Image (cartoon, rainbow, N blue to C red):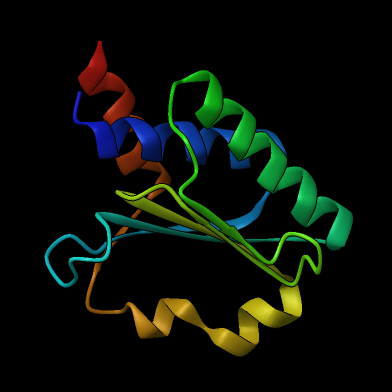
Length: 124
């Protein structure tokens, strides 16, 4: 399996496991050299945001992927986790609406939960 797809699957499952709200996944490989995938979600409060981030970090670490950069964890309004091929953004609900990254990355291809599950089938 392609590394970026494997990382995406791990991060998505880690967020879903901790009940992240409205997980958006955008394939930006064709529109940016920044990363292959941009993941955007939010937590219900700062503790939930931090729990989401910690779960992603733990699952990615166990799979052998190191976070290149982690920004905003302490404030927990917008936490950015850079894994190179994927970037995970975990917001507070209010900050997610304010920054509206989905609008900024609208030229990318939005993936559905079904698309993510297809990645799982590819590895089997």
